[in-house]
Length: 569
Image (cartoon, rainbow, N blue to C red; front, top):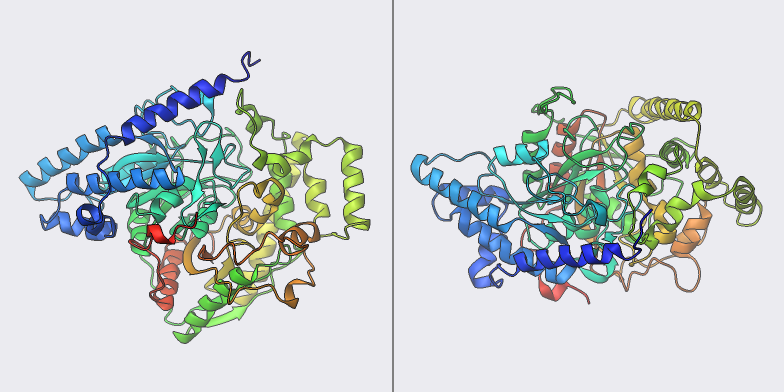
């Protein structure tokens, strides 16, 4: 089918060469010349332009310089749009000099987009070589909406090969993106390039997407803010997907930024705005008034994989900060069985045996990060039966058994049955959590670990279950950075020696002589929390994100927080 096994190499070399040539037009980053601008929030940038203290062109050149620096450090950039961005900035400056009117609330704000967003005249390869050299004919709806607010797209950012199944940001075309705080760890995915770039102030704001945690995992790993909106509130028109026609677990587009204020401004402009085909309901942003005293549920162990000491501390520090502000926080035991959400996710997504997803790989070598995630449907029935027997009688991991059993191709009838199971689970969870406990929202770990070392996803892809839960339920969920790994506070204790979850996974994380969780090696890596709300209550989630952010106070996140001295080689 693919006559030359190394065909991707020529494409990758060409694409990287074009990128690097464009990046070479950037000025050398200078704190004196550019520092004040890149440390400004998007809202501050707009105010300074309005006061005629800065121009859109000046702002753009500062972020171009920083984006080039971020690329050298982390390899986060894919497509470079500097020349068209310069033209757009110049046009904004010309119009503003005449009218003295801002185009919108993001006037002149340099913006990055995850690689699979279509932008006219630019490729959207998603890391696949055979999608290269096919420039898009028009902008995605979300790109159009950002532009309508005055934003200037100027770069696109890296993603994993097969975005739906991996949260390590690496592919054969663009290579691997590093965590902006530690070279030995991943920035997460699939919106990983976005998170790394934003954490380094290489863009003022950005846009990603999420089907299993892709907006949230990299935001937490990298120390920025994001919002996974309710699926159906933001148009996906022009956001290139990998499974056309798949509706079982819907992907949603969402904002990524360096402050909560920016998340809100973007959300006001993209939530519920119909596209040309009216594919989403007209549910525009509505201002909501939150109760003065919130009732917030929280947990540090969902029964499937226990959060590490560092991730547990992030939740408990958030709870403590909220309680100090007078809010009520209630520890929640999630309704079981503990594996139900992942079982449903796997049951639905493996319906075609991942044939559609894996077909896109074409001539490209398959990333090792996909090993475990794609293994299940390939197993012959007798091998799966042996695996299930081992899980039950040898490893003593009954929690993982339903997930492994569900990981196989299915008939149409079986797919419908799994979709019905999803709907039943949504009702069950709503009754047991929202109705019974009468909560305003929930605080949850983003994942069991602060980050993974490169290559870790090959065997630890089940870690994504902590975010997958809210894709299955379709709950709006925001990320707020809370703290950083501190070896003095985050050592394993006896509490992590007696585990009752998915033992086969937890042993790799916490067991043996070299557990994956290593607070010394992870020192300084950010940790966020999930702020969870009911379906369609996206505005309330953003409001709760602000309350959490304010309660936590100053803690070294946001514009200007990244410095070269903080990057661990």
